[in-house]
Image (cartoon, rainbow, N blue to C red):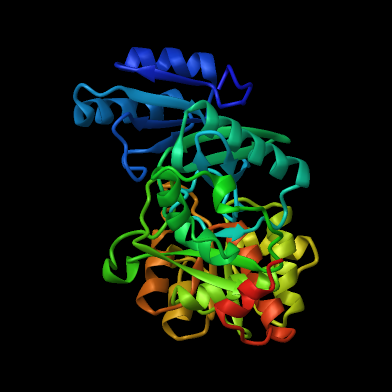
Length: 392
């Protein structure tokens, strides 16, 4: 990375609690910590202070044995992106960049993503393509490679690179009409990208990859997302508008979004995205129920919301409302497992009564945009071949 001039988050390694504390002092919190043998995000965690780090290290060292613990600076409020590439050793080709909907910190396998990007500036897309090609050639990759990035404070950082096929290859192939596995196989057998006539084409539609989770099979498991991968599959929605593509991806993931009714909002961080999303739900005709803090914040900012009690605050409460079928969609961002006020019961109740639920504000905002796109007239049904015919 240093040779190629590609920025990456500051990092360190630790064999002991003392090593970890020393690295934390040098890098600064928050940190992403994980065992070196990590697969699928197992054992990965974001820590915010010395106390959390010491507790993590004591547990991780016991489980990790001789393996080292990897420590990276965690980029807050970053947009995560990734790119799949095919390289023949002399030339590299990137069909499309993917823009994750959830912010960095959610495992890439659990994130929904747009193909191609919707909000990433052109300059960053060009940077990501350049970094990906330079890296593939420098590492002498022949075949497929997946690279994950985070855009933070207008800088593109590389997070990791995997010289192999990723789980997104079939989805990128389908959206871009490029048989990536076939091409990569031919390249590994000696063909060049030039011989195969591979060229970059503009994609006039959008695909949204959405993860599928098994939480309905495990009613006592909190379905909150984090660095550990929890999904067991994925689906794809395609449309000419990003909002409708997102809406279709939710239908495919068995989480059909409502087009009317009541939205329950109980959100940890009160910010502009909450106001924008709530305003959009109001514009679409939804009634908003909200817990005390969220309700007060919305009303103070001119968005009418009605209060609802949490489980420990009395009855009737939000659990009663969900049980009685009074709520059609739940937006609940976790307050964190270390809070004395555990809110996992909200998400577990949603699963039990099959109410669609969302645990990040980015996904909630896209859900509102998806509902709006659907209500304003769905695009005509098209086969995958018809979508591919529009790619010039």
